[in-house]
Amino acid sequence: MTNGLILWADDEIDLLKPHILFLNAKGYEVVTVSNGRDALDAVAERNFDLVILDENMPGLSGLETLSRIKMSHPDVPVIMITKSEEENIMNQAIGNKIADYLIKPVNPNQILLSIKKNLHSGALVSQKATLDYQQEFQRISGMINSANSFEEWCDVYRNLVHWELTLASAETNMDELLKMQKIEANSTFSKFVKKNYEEWVTTDSHPLMSHEIFKTKVFPLLDAGEKVFFIVIDNFRFDQWRAVKPLFSEYFTIDDDDLYCSILPTATQYARNAIFSGLMPIDIARMFPDLWVDEDEEEGKNLNESPLIQTILDRYRKPYKFSYNKINDSVAGEKLLQNFRNLDNYDLNVIVLNFVDMLSHARTESKMIRELAYSDAAYRSLTESWFKHSSALEIIKKIAEKNCRVVLTTDHGTICVDNPVKVIGDKAVNTNLRYKVGKNLSYNAKQVYEVKKPKEFGLPAPNISSTYIFAMNRDFFAYPNNYNYYVQYYDNTFQHGGISMEEMLVPIVTMTKK
Image 1 (tube, rainbow, N blue to C red):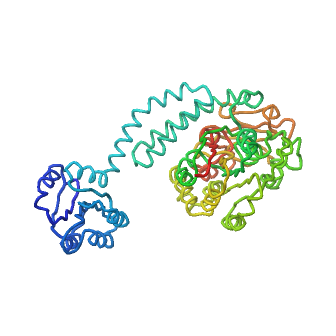
Image 2: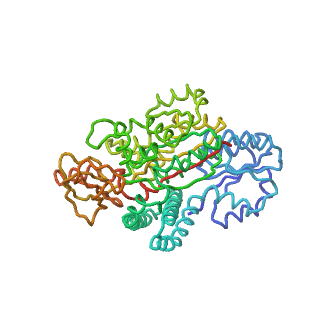
Image 3: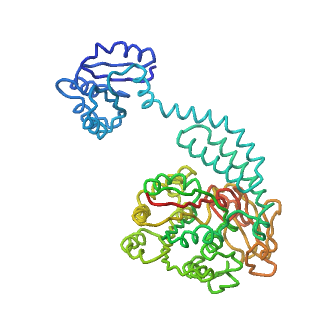
């Protein structure tokens, strides 16, 4: 059993015997040839894990040999070794997707490092990530147990997301341990929210929340004379932002990368309308009854976003002209791109991207989408793929050409649920799985966060006796009727509306074009 089978092609191969013996001692089998044609013959006969090529060989040059190897074996990593530092040679080698480029003279340890980087980096990264997370586990557990402020909970969540992304990319066996730690964190976070939420919505002592986004993040930029693009990605979690952040960093400098607290319920009807109006839901319903849609009404709950934006501009006496565009599909995205010049006429351009929310709901309804986004990691990957290959990225590129600032955020996140909690209600009760509102709800009060006086929490009450209840952690509400079918159907689906770090601690980012 060797660490790898290596082909080394060099016209001075006899002079490299000490290097080869060194690699042999490290567990590598090295096959040697002295020219490019023999290298091609060897590659045709055996499956090498890696090839080392001298650039300056008689007959078939190293670059020609490299090109032919890549045609027949594109996945085999090739290390190019050369005496030349000419930029043209480097460019050709890099263009042929070499694994590494070394300048002679090279010592055995240089060769070994390059081999390890290309053959064993995955295993080494996995090993290092596993060890590091094991060492961090106790520290993060301590953070969870001691967190007593919104800022401290943001730090906990940032740490967990960091390790979630690190372990996923390193392909470790730590996923289950991290999942258990996230469940522990969400359980403690839910208790924190239950203890503090009423104070947040009734006093001035609270973190940045949905209804303050415009006042805090958008108006100061407009007042400073800047043109602003305000992008809202529906149902966009912090870990998804972290996954696509490199795409944005190609075109923008990230000025501020923070988290804010979505209001309850963490659902579009409430949280996004609060963003655009600058008001809590009860105030929207009271001041603009024609723009508020109750739970029991058939009308779409997010159809009045543009007029709600106008209300906050009017209320704060802001003279700014704005545009509003909602992108629900590729057709709408292409239409916006075609008319992009028109956006120069506005001080504020609001763009709502609905794909992530549509993906979340489609995953529940479609077996195929559920398979594609079977885990949080797969869900992130699908989100990233959409950004790369949809009109969203083209829109981002277009914005980067403008002299403007960008505020990117979401209305709420989502969480994968797997624990049913029984609740009984009449026909008027809403259908959301993470929160319920009704006048005749029956439930175990210990399993939910209950709000019996909605008006004191900034929520409209359809009836005098209406109660809101919110699911916590990975819970979802299920009815006793057809209970088993219901549970099986919604188990391991992404839902929102309740209390969890994923739903409530959401990104708010300010960017400047590079």
